[in-house]
Image 1 (tube, rainbow, N blue to C red):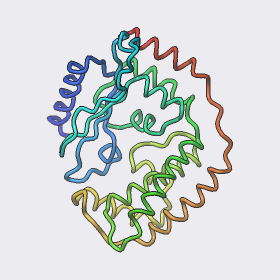
Image 2 (cartoon, rainbow, N blue to C red):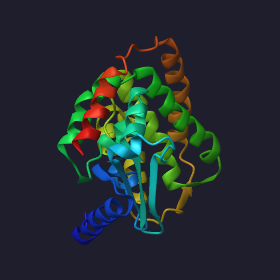
Image 3 (cartoon, helix red, strand yellow):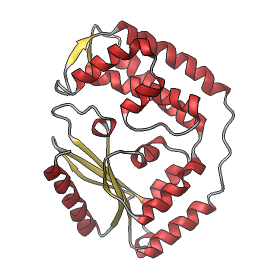
Image 4 (tube, helix red, strand yellow):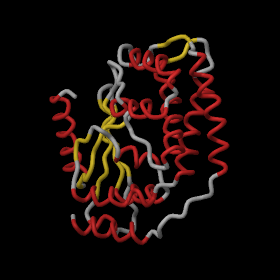
Length: 256
């Protein structure tokens, strides 16, 4: 990653802390750069988790739990309040796990490591599989049936499908880098087609299009159907009581 851009992003995180009077405990890249196949014109999808001062959580009027700092052709920077993050974690929200697993980290802390230490307890296999299948199926139906297809739309269907296969086979949250998924769960017969997609993705603009790839369409369509049946066969997971997250939240807010 470009060192000047990394420094610029870290400076912007400090600006957010000053402007919003918050403490950012974690920040990382999300999206195509974290997945490992950014286009030449891809923006920087920076996501962060922050903690407000204790008194903000004690007010009768609820404080907004999202900060959207910048959205332009270069930066897409936004973050979630710790309380929102922990609530989503309790429900096994895949986005929380993806942020935590990003290979590009701009800010880390002991506080965030305490959150990470509890994440495995709230992993729900069925919840995550249904989430990823919903994304894969939706993108397939909306974007991959035309004769000409935007390259990145294939990844928006392929990656969540491979995440679902990973969860089915390993019963753990999937990795963020696309290459780890393809190395582990992609059928070998599709490797050349996917490798060519990756080559195109990093070489052409975000709007670049190619002809429909029949082998990948068949793989996505059949995979979504088969894995939906698998997900339906799973029993709902049992998760811990919220007390463990309540205690963590209080501790981290007081710490600040």
